[in-house]
Amino acid sequence: MPLRHLTPRDQHLFWQYGRGADVPVHEPLVHRAIERHAIAHPHAVAAEHHGATLTYGELDRYAGALAARLVREGVRPGDRVGLFARRSIPMLVGLFAVLKAGAAYVPQDIGRTPPARLADIVRTARTRVILTQKEHLPRVPLPGGHRLIALDDPAPYAPGPVPPPLPPHPDDGCCVLFAPGTTGRRPHGVQLTHRNLANLLLTEPGGLGIRPGDRVAQLLGIASGPAAWEILGCLTHGATLAIRGTDTGAAARTATVLIATPAVLSGIDPADWPHLRTVAVTGEPCPRPLADRWSGRAALLHCRGPALATTMGRRTPATGRPLPNSTVYVLGADRRPLPIGETGEVWAGGDCVPAGCLGGEALNAERYAPDPFLGAGRTMFRTGGLGRWTPDGHLEHVGRLTDRPLPRLAGERTVTVPR
Image (cartoon, rainbow, N blue to C red):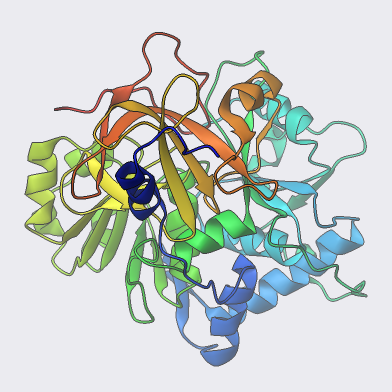
């Protein structure tokens, strides 16, 4: 019994504080949630960029044709497809098409990532098909036997025979996030599943209350976890994605929902966002003055967890509660639960746990372990953070491991939470 050493009170609070609400997820496959909106509201605007618009009906039609092309190229559930593109409407179509084909997309900003680094990612992710825009075709490293498809060429959307699709499973990959790194060093990518993303996007508070008629700003680099939250969080709820061009102000003037890092928030003025209702701040701790500045403009959610959120809260930048269908544990060095109020390592379990790292065998050994609390073959994830439960059941993040720092995941930063 893994809780036997605790007092009866702490055994009870271990589950009361550490288990998120059990909430049904109405659609465990992310792309199916988007398809529902395309069927119900085909003329609603899914995305805007540089004055161009794309409706949900057009998005579904174009992505369906490209998905058929990918299936004809041999793409199947469990495969990974490179999405080496700039922020744009064609990028959005390519992302949706990969999901429709049952595969996981591997996003990289083709304008920022060096070709040698892209080559490292192609090798690690074993992408046999890569999507990009025509102007960037020369930048894409293409090993023998790989296929390169231009997203803004009409040819990918030409009709053709459609092989019967193989439906993915909720535990199949949805996307793979690679951390920025040094060329020549083997990269590692965090594998997110449909279950991970659907659990965040289609339950609250991770759904951010997004609904049809909302406008979600798409400001972040496409290779990051928060960008997946921006894009898929918007589309799975039938809202409009305001894709940033060279003028951030164009998105700011109309957006109702914003997902951003503290670095992004510190560089923009809340007064320029007159319609903003909700801000989710993620990626690193939000300094209290910055949080106070933005909370006067909109409801501010503090999100913690590498790649995707594990806890979310409104009270202070350093506290939160577990997401639905997820668990959070504060453990000692022997991986035994600590009494309420004691500081220890923060581990996470349940549906928020990623499927492991590509190219990171040592990282997998450090970060993942069998979950003795949920059992049934479940896995728990070592976040690398330190925390403790407050008396009223909030997880207070108090810093990171310093005696033996863990290797970092894609998009994760080593930080210390201000006290």
